[in-house]
Length: 197
View 1 (cartoon, rainbow, N blue to C red):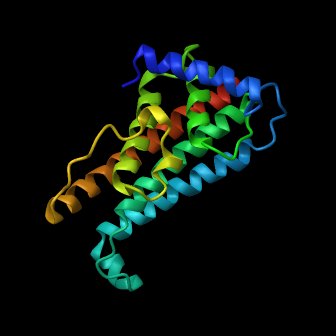
View 2: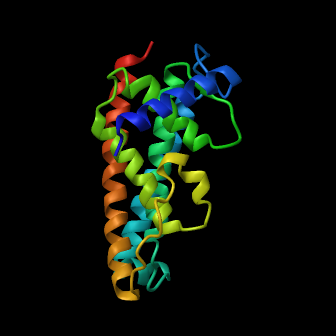
View 3: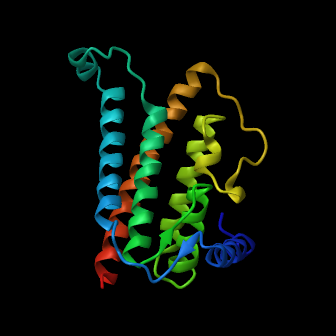
């Protein structure tokens, strides 16, 4: 998924972001704990929504009979990864200063400052990208542009699932999102601890 062309494009965009001030380096580390906390809260939300979506007893006890929160499991799982990526950047003194495309800039910055220099394993970055792509597939037009940078934007029309298949597919994507978010968060926490200054 991350071929050389896409990596070079991300690196080129980061140079522009550095030039125009959207990314600043050598900044004071102020918000590491804030982003770590938001990552944990988002992952907890994903887990709670998944549990409520799959546990009929819990649905009856809480009054949310036939609750289906799989779409938001994917969202919360992605945001957990996004906040963890922001924590990693913040821990290195890298700030994102943009109201536009903060998700795209964050992803490009992770590629430039951690992936290309070997600080992150390739699999973690790919999980982050796949989670964003799946979130956009499920969200459709609902703020997809906030979740996906330009090179992960939809590549043509996606297959339309039937009503019965859709529920199964969305549940599987929700499970995958939680697993990816957990793995991503664990690895990023290790890196933050290793590179704490």
